[in-house]
Amino acid sequence: MPSTELPDTEWSQPAPSTDVDLAGLDGPPSSFAAPFPRPVTDWRPLEELNVEPVTAPPPAQRPLRLSSVPPSMPLSEPRPSRVEQRRRQGRLFGALGLALIVVSALGLWLFPRTGALVIRLRTNRGAPAGRAEIFVDGTKHCDTDPCVVRGLPAGDRTVKVILPGNREPQTTTAHVDGGDERTLWIDVPASR
Image 1: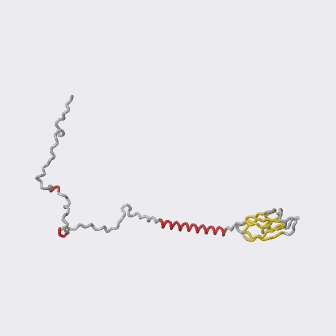
Image 2: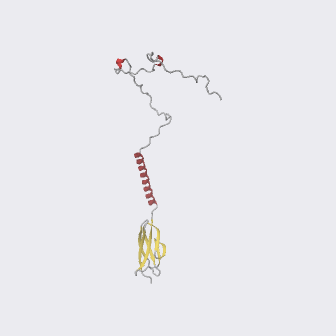
Image 3: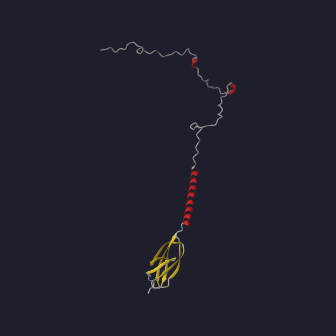
């Protein structure tokens, strides 16, 4: 079996004693002197201690610059506040609403709305007339009762009704409103 003893090396030697006799020393050697002056514990005015007061260096005379923004890059505009944003939105919606009103008015003025006329015939006995030629403003539109005429411009229209077997036409005037359907009852003599 091999031996477990360690050979004589510096690791195997006991460590030297670290006890130092400090009784003969008066203070730290000069090589250990602090690089800063000792703090002043005397609170007399500085003039009496012959010490000059320490002042802060004067501020730099050049303008301040943001270090993260290069000088060639312009600063962006500050973001508007919520009040300014709402004010702008209100103006925008107001302008859009006004434009919509103007376009609607122009549309109604340029493209007038037309109306419709429903022509109903009744005899003096209250029965429907049945067959009749119906003219509106000189144009024939229907041969039977009731007659619905759409697309008439707004205004007064002349309606003429000719019954079969009757020589005299019935003529009347009706007012047509744009976008409205009006019913016109015309009394005619009973057919023979």
